[in-house]
Length: 446
Image: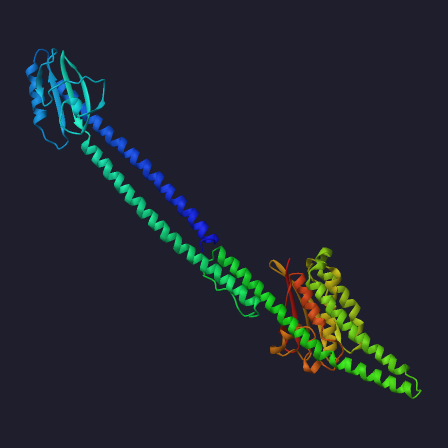
């Protein structure tokens, strides 16, 4: 834990919090202390002024009376007074000696002739020749500042404790979440692709990163499942043509041993090998597209032009099959897209050929384009036999073919190529029921 980033961050912020608190306490203490001493100076000065103002010229008795009145007051603030004649004779007050000072000064009790360890804040001066001194003990003020200092000390201790507890809690909480991420990645690396990181629901940075990791793991799981499925499909779908190729070659060997011509067998073997090679070429092309290398060829294209070109080329092919391919150009909006024109053309061709290969004669195949708010939608629909709902996601797998389509031409990679091209161009594709028939819907942002 002590080497972890959360602990170091908590320690750094905790230290910053404690230092900041200490500075605030220190500034507050010195400001309060200065304010208390200022109040004490004001009290001493005002007392001196009151006594001084009570004197009338030639009437020392009033001055002595005022002094004695102040001396008899006990406000708990320990005041001292002295009034003496110019020749040093004490006339009133509780001090025996006069201590001349300049302005406000802090003096010890010993300097004032008192038997204590206190300090006093005093002011002295002349009143019509007499010596007047007024002072007040600093004991209460120093006790108050001492109490403030002790309170601040305890507050600092509690602050340290709270900072330590909070830091430890936050560290353990953050470390627990990081450990959960590490454990999940360890489980995934151990082969358990179902593991995902639990989200705290706070939407903080760890939640965001966890969500991104989960999305990456979902993608990785899908890819691995796709690889597993591809391996199984390759083993299943290529087993038959490879066995057929083997039988053809064995027959050619027997024919050759009996001196019979083998050109027919060799021609048939060549066709089988071409079919197998085409399957692997299609798989290789899908892998290249999924790797994203074709993004370098992206440029702005108009899907309207691509649909029009494909419709024009395949209209006659559909007519030869007894089918109808239609694409109404009137009113069709422009649908721009940043992409690879060759791949996008292949995408539309594959969807059209898929409909033509798996639909009977007299089937109508329709192409359409529509603009929506912030994007475009392209549709390739037919009124053929349709696709069962539970099979609509599976048809995009490599080499996957519906049972009813296994006797038709193709190797089960046309729609896989379509899915790879749509992913490359940040498009979405979904299959819907056309009632009757199937409807392939492409969507992308404009």
